[in-house]
Amino acid sequence: MLRVLGLPVHRCSRTETLDRLADAVERGRAGAGSLQVVTLNPEICMQARRRPELAAVVGRAGLVLADGHGLVWASRRLGYTPLERVAGVDLLEDLAGLAARRGWRLFLLGAAPGVAAAAAARLVSRHPGLAVAGTAAGSADPAEAPRLAAAIAAVHPDILAVAFGAPRQELWLDQHLRATGAAVGIGVGGSLDVIAGRVRRAPLLLRERGLEWAWRLGRQPGRLPRMLRAAPFFLLVWRARAR
Image (cartoon, rainbow, N blue to C red):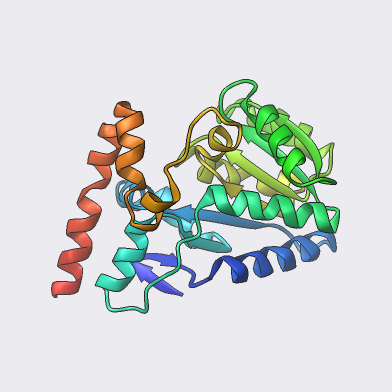
């Protein structure tokens, strides 16, 4: 594990991540509790600097992954062996395949109405045998959380993917994952929109060169304020290395 601007990041390859999550699911099924996964990016890092409660959630998470080339660059800049990027959308796809092979149940929560169901249908078509315990648009509204957690627990999922957007999904999982009964909970942001086909992902060539952000900005100009709020991350990391 290493630290980026005070936040922990686990050094896991995509394969090692799946191994750790497989172990967490089996342990959870045996009653050993649940594991929260945070897919960390510069935007969440900057939010955590402004919100101590979010920084505490990241610190408590059982697994914190480098989701985005910004974290990969930061690890290199800070003098560490570079991290391997584990994008949330790729991880969810990998987990669906593993769940289909091992008989685990998946629940998709969040995004706009109908998106989770469409994403589930796509995952089932790509991973025959996948058991989807349920889907719901839901809400991060605290008043709705007890009812929503109880409804999820009633269908006994092993893996819960939450797409409320950062940091709402991280805060929601920290407070309610145990009540859902799921062994693994992961915040997946916009991954359901991508899997459902509502948002087109950047071509592989751009992703490999760390230019996915430019593709997303070109197709979704409304993301500019979010990107600007995350931009100081790079200056802070640069200065941290200079000390």
